[in-house]
Image 1: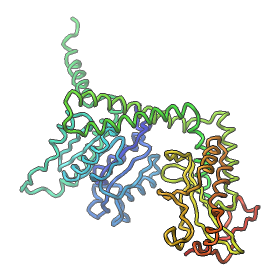
Image 2: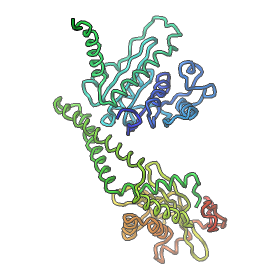
Image 3: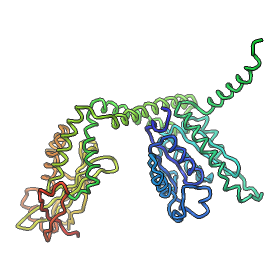
Image 4: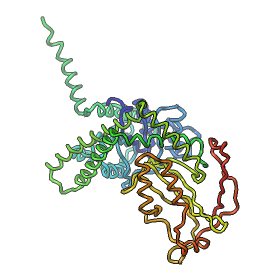
Length: 219
Length: 258
């Protein structure tokens, strides 16, 4: 199995904001057949700058429906299945690959509780987070107790900062693109049966070898 | 039959695919899939137990990984079978199934067909009973193929209320439905319908089910209460006909709602 086209199970994308807009694009590029998108929000005017899938006509409409319309306009092979609801503890139909792109720790906790309910059916849970200029992705197998423990420690609300934030930093496109790139990398490695840790180690090894090689040039 | 022509081909496709499950190699995969899901469910229960020992947890995590692999492999193989070109043997069966479905659609009592959310093919049968020159409405009944209940290869449930005016307790006509809302068709009829489906005689299965839902228990006491228990159907109107059945010029009475 090397592409998402061969993936026989489901793919769930939770949240339909800045991260999910870019991730859905990547999922289509990777050949996903069906993607379930979950969000209960509607498109607002301020969403448009960094959520490119929404048009002026979509304002006031559910985000998930707008994403379906985008996929149809682009004539994608990927079928987008909309779920206009929040993922909370009562949702017990998550199965397959789950990608979260929400904007609050509370939502992440709710999603994590839902993931825990059917964890044996979820071999990969990706949680993308962006704050202004930074992006971070968590790659968790909900049945791997070591990674679960590490992830659960991250589900703590950060203390509110009083520092004034530059309003334009929130609209930076590169953070969301960065998450989409990381999702692509993690998914590709997962489908190859490798972990991100192994890949990083391999890259480091390769880099070390390439550095060493000029030193061993025969005289 | 009022089936939408766009639905018609979807239902036909699903009806033909009902047989795919009957090939032994597909059954084998389904069994393996079922086993892996059963194991995963069991492991899910154990892993949610906070008192589990660390070494046990590690072992279970390994088992989860192998069960997941097994499940994905089964899903992949099933998908490949669905998308694979049909063999000669399958093509012959497909043609037979198509003919059967067309015959079922031509039954005057069959008023709709669709695929439900579980992928089962549902045939909706209208039920009436004529007594002393008046036709009474017994409701619509949904016969599902491809949904396996605990004991049967089919399900027969109420699709539209039959406007019953009173139940057992008020001394009127007895309730046809069992606990889940399925039709109480009697052991003998149930066995025969199951047998028809098992031997792939779907037309006969629908015919028998139609006969059963359109009948009243042959007891003088119950027949005497029909007029009180059910609404009469008036007036008769021509029922819309599926494009494929136009030559048949079917005429069918449509009841008034409420």
